[in-house]
Image (cartoon, rainbow, N blue to C red; front, side, top):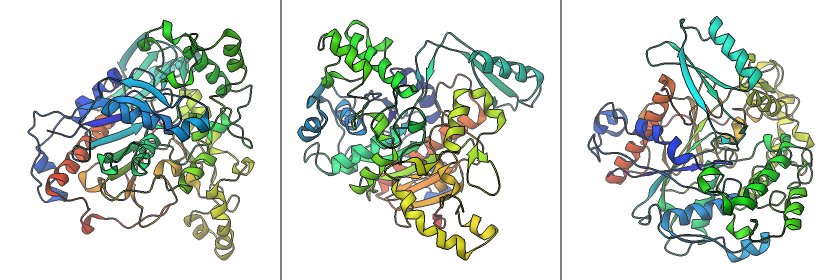
Amino acid sequence: MAIPLVVVEGFLGGNFGASLWRSVEDIVNELDAPLDERSSSNLDALPSITDANDRRKLLIVSVGPASSLHDRACELYYALRGGTVDYGFEHSETHNHARFGRTNSAGTYPEWSKDHPLHFLGHSIIGRGGIIYHQQSYFSPHNSPYSIGTRFWAFLAFLVRFRLSISESEDGRSLWTVTFSGLEASAWAEGGPTIVKLQYLISIGHFGTDAHPDMILSVHSISAAFRGTQLVYTLGESTHSAPSVRHISIGALLAKLIHIFAYISPLVPYSLLWDLHAESRSLSYRDISIPAFFRHLWRSDWAESKDATPYDMTFEAADERESRGEGDPFPNTFYQSLVFSMTERLSSSGPNHGPPLSWMVSGPLFMMSRAIGVFDFSLLRPLPKFCERHKHSEQLINSTSGPTAMEAGVSPDSHLDQSHWANDGVVPVFSQYHPFECSPSKCNHRGPLDLGIKNGPFAGRWIVQQLVESHSHFSFVPPIRTRTTAQTTFWKSIGSQLDSIDSRIIRGQHTQPQSDLLPICTP
């Protein structure tokens, strides 16, 4: 039987996962050819572990949509295996919440163990504050996505905040989809970092001696913010005193909304609101008085703490994680990160990036991408470690000139390469790669994404693959109401790579044949 794939959503993931990801499950299980034929170019015709009718299950697990990486990882572990969530004595004492959380009477996959490992896929998914009322797809009479009809809908979408996506259908025609929706809130890419945190906690014995890092067979991250994102500061996190949040900011507004949802949560089914997994924090009307509730609205002890999503997405928090060794690859786990960017260089003489004007229809996403692309890292205190490491690059600049200096990935203004400003609207490219700086022993960077098996993951090292086309943080996340060629190809490639890993496990082959390794690329 095919090894299941666990999907871990990010910040504000909500309760929509099970329904939204079913379309992806269908695509992942589509087989163009038997596994042994699809793998022959790279794995010497490995035997198929399943027949064509066997399906790989997607396990959609609910974790706290605004919780810290630590809390989310604990909730993920017990949601899969079952039992009462234990955040740990030291952690709960430090962050002033109860040690134990929700009890899962039956785990989603109670047999999960070193002998029965699971695949994991992490991505943040947009949280919806309103209900989608209607979605309709239209075919353009022309192949170009810039026909008069498309421009009209693009203009309308920009004015009234509809959501419009333009793509190519499988028969080559231009497909534009308009979604009439309520308020949409942005999301962090916290799914991938949650999995990395989970494996780290397992390795240090947080869940006991029967848990082992090899329980995580593979990690597939999509637009994950392993090393933080500038966006968290743009939306309200203090640049010099995190985790403080500016009172007049989007982040402060989101914190107030989350406290309101937590307060009324006993009255409303989880399916109609975010399931905050906040039992350990005692935030509902059953646990706190009305004056205490208003104090939380004025200043949130949760949102403005180091035990919440916003702080975990700062560069300061990422440096703290790396100082503890979180994110070091384990030898028997396969790692892959898929990197997206929707921006281009603003000038040939500097590293700053911005989205093309064609992305203006995305509204808030366009503005967020623009803010990330021109962010001034010198405003941050403490200064991120990657800025300190690159101070020596001034010597490289002084010893080179012209195109050579730019090819070296060095900016005369910031001493950082352009990957720190290129972004997908939520996460800068360099943060999507993997934890830590690039190292020949930890990562292998591919060129433009090859969707074949040959560039799939292998054990003990991060494989980084970047799409050459312009794609945003949400280009390949569900719902996929009408499949496009790009969406279908992308998710079928994920399914093929999972098949490849399953077959290697049968043969006991964790390492990649040396002939298949491309030269190490240090961005």
